[in-house]
Length: 146
Image (cartoon, rainbow, N blue to C red; front, side, top):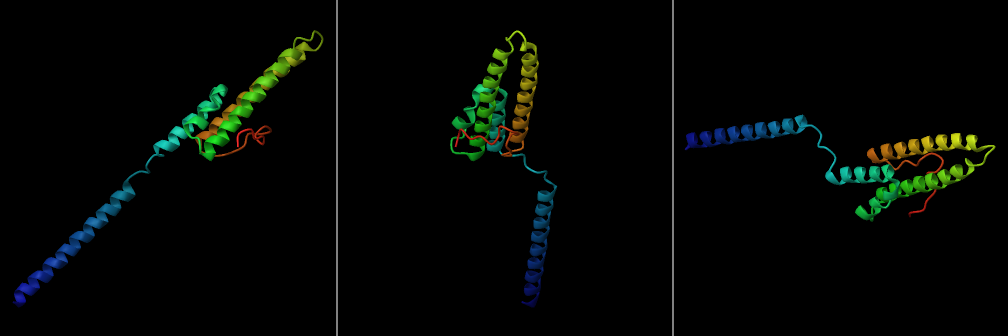
């Protein structure tokens, strides 16, 4: 009877040791596994918001795909502001550039303006890719989409 008791105790100790080793291996595997990539929703959100900056007329795309998301609304607003400023500024500088005496100056200013708008688009794309809600310089404070 005592032998049976000793055998049972030994089996229990062996089982507990095996369980501990299994748990330890599982922990080591978790630590060795590389970080999981961002979930699909975040990746989709990044791409949609970046597209809204690339093609300004698609500013509404984040609003359609993610209608209740603050991040999407923020970047849709920023994209819309960039689009409006680009169109209005381009039209104003374009019209002023046809004035005979000072037209060349406004033509140069138009090209500088277009480069600045391109820089703002790039800043917006970088902000969206990092999942940040960072306002664009100068024009980022305006809110048309709330």
